[in-house]
Structures are given as structure tokens and as C-alpha cells.
Image 1 (cartoon, helix red, strand yellow):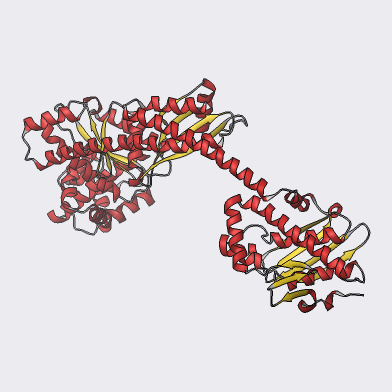
Image 2 (cartoon, one colour):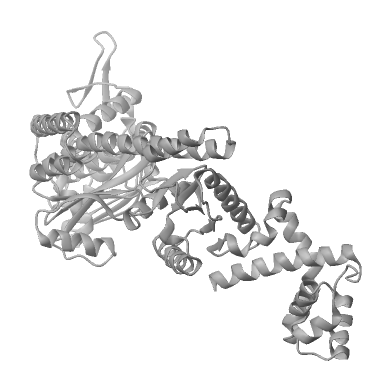
Length: 600
């Protein structure tokens, strides 16, 4: 009776050194390098894809194991089936594929269970080398070998699968074999890979897929060529969308980056338009409403996205058509963007010319008529909007879509607005900027906005001054320790404009806090009005009687207040220098107060 532990390479394998022929049970064998098997695996995966390669290698391993089982069974008179199973593990080890340890083996007439460990699996090693770690076991030929061997020796169907695998970062490789009746549905899933199918069938299927892909490429090239010709002929963007829509039999929408609003669209029916509107507001879609989105990019910048709306998933050919079309739409959108940037640049240069003061007035008027849609010779004023630089173009596009009558452009990471006569009344401006700020905060919820409005410009030459003052006010807002979106109008800041021109805003605010910080805090803690008392005193040029009358206070009552104020202010307000510093601090205070009121 033969036992598995008596199997050694010299007894099991017949090597003829003269002819170089290696035989196992009179069947010729060959030695192959592990590296060669690794490259074979790599090429099979590249040719068939990972999933089909898995099936092919499982069946290949099954054939090897089944042949080995047939050979071993006929070579010796074995004590029992347990020894035959152990012999299979021994032969698998002798062949150099892997070191096999059977940890548990239970066999009966209607049940089979085996658990074992594979050490030094060449297959896990080579898979990781060529494909990196996987999220599932990768010892496919080893699993197939065990399945094929048991299928030959044991008379009932078994399932073999890996519990752990070094190919998915486990500490070792372990396998389990059990009868199909005792396996779970998930464990039985591997059986579908063992359906008989030749490599020729796999290659035929791959050929047919490649043929289908080639046809899809030809069709996508055809659509791409058609779109390109339309673009070169100068047809409208909606015409370009119609071509794609007709080809896909779907509605198409183009959105500019971060606007979430149609830049152009072609809806095939009202239902698709309704579907898009619900998608826009993140409302749940039905299972029959399918939306696909694709980024439109140029020079690694996302310019917008194309949205495809239909009632079923896109086919692979349709996806290829969309992806090929993206280049045409990217060219169009990027060209429009460059044209817009060129216009912005010319308008920004016009403002710089005014500020420079060297250009002739008539020449400026001529340029303005060419550049702007509004009459900048009449009363105007400049407003600027400051926000995060990466969204400034989106903010400008938002303004163009929602405030088309406004003249706007981008200059130095600001959106510049030229306000015509109808915006110049302060009350109207307050209402307008309240609404504008609210809309911006809704649309760009995670961003902060600073809006600054310069002075009236009664002539075209004064437009540069209005821009500069808006810039100074915006810079002041930026350093006023406010974290909310806010706007400020020149009229509330004109009394400190000289200081904004000559002093860094940060230093000005620091000075104001050092002068009035304790006084303001005292008012807050005691619900008093000492800051206002000081303002009236300074406005009255230090006249005690006049100040007391304006405040409806008695002279003693006023002096009591002044004593308290003097104890909280670091400068002597009885002399001229002290009064001047307090006057400046008071101006800054009330400018900031008007700012707080505009955002409350």
C-alpha cells in the first residue's frame, strides 16, 4: 500500500538526462520559469481582461489538477482516498508551484471538506508583480488545480475557493474545498468560471468586442468630424448641441463651471426639461430618468460640463461619441472664454489709461463708445466685487446671466461694475446691493463677498478716481476683521478717504481700536452712549455748552460723562492733538458701524 509521505521527486518524476525528456507516469512534462508564467499571465489579462483571464486560468489549473489526479491514482495502490488527497498536495509541492499543507480533511460518502495553506505561491507573487495587490484572491491556477484533482478522485461535485491570499495583502494563502451542497451561494459563484470554453472562444469574443469598439470609434469619429465642420463654419452653439442630441436621441445641456445654470441647451421634450430642473435643485429622479455628466476641459481647467438626459443608460458607442464630442465643445467654450478675457483686458486697460491721466479726453470717449454698452460720459460710478480668485469668472458669468443690463468685466481678480445713472441714488443702491449680495450668497454659499462702491463720476476722466476709491474701500473691508459678506458705499467713507489713501487699513483699524476700544466696551457693558457723546463734543469743536444742549444734558451731567470718557481714552482730549486723534478714531468707528448695519 502506497502512502503520500513516501512520494519524492526521484521516484515520481523520470528525467532522461540524455534526451532532456521529463516524464510523470509516462506523460511528458516541462519545467518552466516562474517569470515566464508571470509574463504569460500578464499577456492573458491584457488580451482577455481580468475577469476572462481568471476563468481561463481557473480552467487551465483544473485541467492540470485533473490530469495529475488521473496519473497518481493509476501509478500506485493507495491505502485510501485520504492518502490520495495527501498525494495530490505532495505532487503539487514537488512540481514547485506552491508548498501545500492540509490543515483539515473530512471525507464521507456524501460530504467532503478540506482546508489547507499554500506557502510561497508563485501565482500571488507574480500577480502582485504585474498588477499590484487585488481586492480578491488571485491564485486561480492553484484553485483550479485543487478543483480538478478532487473532481477526479472524489465522486461528488466540490467547490474550491481562497479564504485568504497574499495577493490581497493577507498574511498567507488559505484554501477551502467542500461539497457543493454544503457551500453558500457566494461560495458557489466561482463554479461559473469552470464552464467549458476554449481559448479560441475567448479570443473570438474578444475579437468581436474589438470589432464593435472599432465600429464605435468610426461612428464617434464621424460625429466628431461633423461637429468640427459646423464649428469651422461658424454655426451657433445650439446647432452644435442639436447634432449631438440627434445622434444620441437625448436632450443635451451645457453648463459653465460652477454656475449650475444652462449656458446652452437642446431639450427634446418638456419631460427632459422638467427632469433637468429637478436635477439642478438636487431633487430625486425616477428610475427611468437617467442623467450623465461629463466635464468640459481645456489646459487642465474645467470650463463647464455637458449633461445628457434620457430614459436609459448610454451604450458604449454613445459614451464614446460624447467623449469625442467634448473636444469640440471645449474648443468652442475656451474660444468664447478667451474672447471674453480679451474684452475684459481692453476694458481694464481703459480704466488704467484714465487713472494714468495721459490720454486725450476725445480719444477716451471714442474708446469708451467702442468698449461699453452704456454711456460712460454721463453720471456713473464704479463698484467692485472681491471674492476667492478661483470663482471670480463664475461670479462674472452669474452677473451676466442675472443682471444683463449691468456693464461688467474682470480686472486684477475683481469683478468691476460700471453703474449707470439709474443706480446712482443712494437709496436705490442700498436696495440693489442688498439683493445682489443675497443672491451671491445663495448661489456661492461657501464663499465670502466684499462689494465696494466708489464716488460719482460726472465725467469720463473721473471714472478712474471712482475705481480707485472703490478699491480703497474694498481694501479697508478686507482688513476690518469682518468674516461675513458685506458691501460699502463711498458716501459712508468719504470722511476717512484721505486716511485710507495714506494709511494701511490694518494700521488704521489698530489705531482706532487702541483709541476707542475701552470706551466702546464700556458702552456695551453698561448700555451707555459715551462714544456718541464724544462724537457730539468733537463735532461741536469742544464747546461744552453747545454739546450739553445737543445732548439735552445739564452742564454738571455732561462734565460727569466727560470725566468718564477721559478715563477710558488714552489721549488728552483737551488739547488739539488729542482731539484730532479722537476725531479720526470716531470717523473710523462710524464707518465700521455703517458697515455692520449693511450686513445685519
